[in-house]
Image 1 (spheres, rainbow, N blue to C red):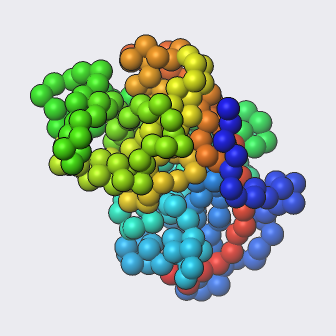
Image 2: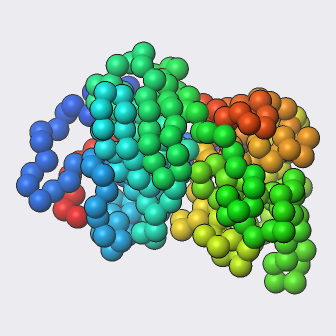
Length: 298
């Protein structure tokens, strides 16, 4: 079962050559690129990332700014090598963003990176590699997941496949995984009736999550297919979360619910996730779609 997105996705053919159509940005203005990965939307700005939190919040505001879930900064460091930073809509900095990485790679290719090359991205969450496999499809190496509680970080007496946790007097069992950013995972029987609006913020800010966490709610249909909804740290529920999809598959593999190749259906669409097991990187393949480009006074 594949959930339907509530957002209309623009026709990519209409945006052909979209990165080369505007003149250089005017002084005191920033060129931006609006993109999305399965409805998880981003404003991408060139440079190493030097805006203050209030400016980031204003740009991300959907009524008074451009509007996005996250703001990404892309800094070219050499041929095929890029630095990147990720900021949530509330102005807080995040270590990682899987959907954002695919969009950064698509933008880099559209701006002139050799189409057959593998691109290297260096960020707070580690080093990742991306390759264009189809015009709209990007495959990203998301790195080796971290499972030790101290590395996630998640407060627990020791590493385990799952952990008991108390939320307002109710007991739950969660998985804890870092994909360069912290994730808690909760398996539910029915995503439509799950209390995501209540449990998401409570788990994000739980005392056992010292740097807060992204919260994934998964409903497993088979060993090769699951549905996922994610409450993202500093944002709220989004239409898709790439690192959350990877974390969900890792936990499902650890619990022996899933196989090595899984289709993850999110409200905005589907990602293909591959994980061979402990000590190996997770691979994610999915679309990266341009929306529009312009200038803004930060």
